[in-house]
Image (cartoon, rainbow, N blue to C red; front, top):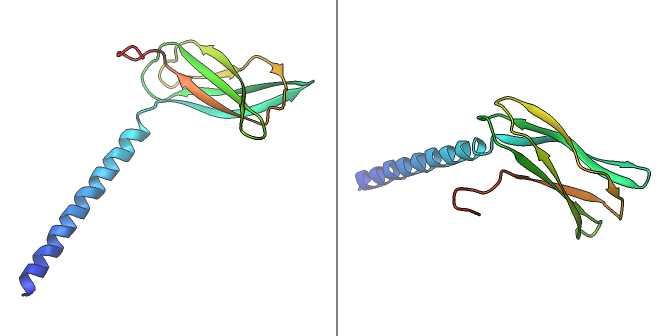
Length: 124
């Protein structure tokens, strides 16, 4: 009666180790899947105008042109505008500073940034 319990524990350990290895693989695959990162962003207010500035860094292969989409939100989380900043392609290891065009500060409380790499091979 001791052996079946021992075999079950051994099987459970093998399954657990396999699951942990798979989870580790997925984590590292996702970490490396987006080589272009946005860093050091901030909302800048000046004279009733607002803009977002930051830096785009490439940790992967050379890229083609990118678009940095800045979405603005009011205090209630409602979208109140969007700007697009075009960035030329980035070489491996390069970084570039970006700045959205100044816009009227119509209650901007927060922002989010989306990187657009253009159309994928499937056309969307």
